[in-house]
Image (cartoon, rainbow, N blue to C red; front, side):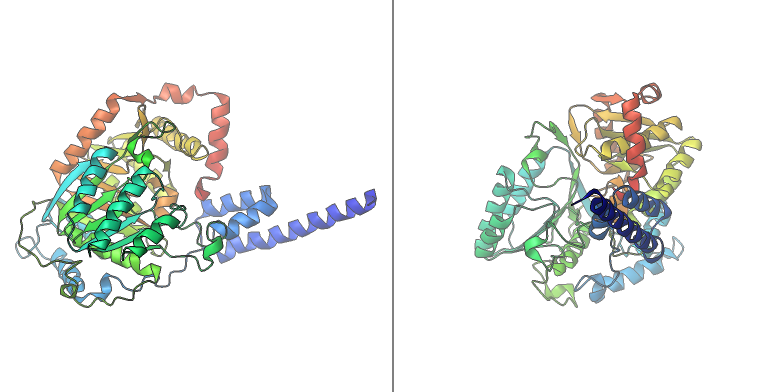
Amino acid sequence: MDIYSVYNLHTVYGLTTFVVNIFLSIAVIFLQRKQPNSVYAWLLFIWLFPVIGFIFYILFSQKFSLRRIYRYSKNDNSNYNDKLKMQKREISLSPLQAFYDFGDFKDNIEYHINVSDALYTKNNRVEIFTDGKELFDQMKEDFRNAKKSINVEFYIINNDNLGNEIIDILEEKAKEGVEVRILYDEIGSNHVTKFVKKIRAAGGKIGPFLPSKLHFISRYFNTRLNYRNHRKNVVIDGKIGYIGGFNIGDEYLGLKKKFGYWRDTHLRIQGDAVKEMQWRFLSDWSTTGQENVVFNEIKEYPQFFPEDEAEDFGSTGIQIVASGPDMTNQVIKQGYIKMINDAKDNIRITSPYFVLDNSIDEALKIALNSGVKVEILIPNKPDHPFIYPTTLSYVGELIEYGAKVYRYLPGFVHSKVMTIDDSLSVVGSCNFDIRSFSLNFECSAFIYDRKVTQELNKYFNKDLEVSDHYSLGKYLNRDTNQKIKESLSRLLAPLL
């Protein structure tokens, strides 16, 4: 091939690439209803990496259809709907007329009742776990004591020592006649083939959330690749629920040197809120297509919803709030903003990732300018190198507004916790990042209880004792290489 032919080929390739990028840019701008920051980031990525950008856009940026993806939901249950309507009515009544005592959190509760369809329950008991071994020892004991049903939902179930131990217990319970269902994410849990065979052979059920129609290439080409089920939700006999940040794997026990000690937060809940967790699981489970269950009355399914035994579990108010790309509103993020706006004294946030959109970034800056003390705990080491500079960029900006930022030294902090004024808190799977707010399916417990919130703050204080204060001086004196990394990663933050 002579030099002129090569030149012509390059010219054709360049012109074709230019035309394709023009049409793709039009699609990004006019066909996909995205936030401006996201549009700018995709345009930058597409023009910097023409071919790769096109492939990534197809895989990662397709808008999730708002069609009903669940075969059944809370709306299929007349009992649930009646309670929800009653609580919406109660919100409008005066305190003397109302049956429910919403206390100082009426507006927060009202928001989630109206927008998230999250029932408020108050007969609950909460235990906090921050150590993986303690959590899974208790969870395994609860599994072994199960009599009717075990429903398990995790983003990651690893094929390692802990994963196999958990699966072995669930296999035995399935053989005993306990109804066992395991829901996993196809991308997060990509080595579960052996587990699937074992559980199904024992009579249990197991499957991926929103399975790809092309199972054999689902890990490599899936137009839903960007929308992951990040929820961690366990319900046992309809009486005990677990929710928080831990997944199932040896690293969550601190057994991998790469991460060191794994610092996370999970809740064990008993009481009325467990029913709401059960509904969340069953709705998510319906996406597997394995069962077509029609829920008209919860009394028809005692294995999931046991009859009330009038047991007093305490007085902890809880709403179980789920969010995902199938929803019009980013309800967990908006719940965070509501809490931040209501804060009078202090805001404490723990998150492994800190990548903010404009709304929550502005809310935190307004709080700081209003004299509210904001403290943020992040890891001292990255598990995703590209995201960590973005996290440092966002927290650095808040440091300049007066926020106190700390980096956890003993290992990796993976907790997703926020507390407000020692009175209101949230624990769940939702990170403080754009991905969790808008792309992932998440689930968190909003907790209206001073005692629980103060206990979470005690753990926060202990974490600060072994953390590095990332001061304004350290941020301003970071080296040029770090500044370049932060600037480049910040440009693509909406894509992370």
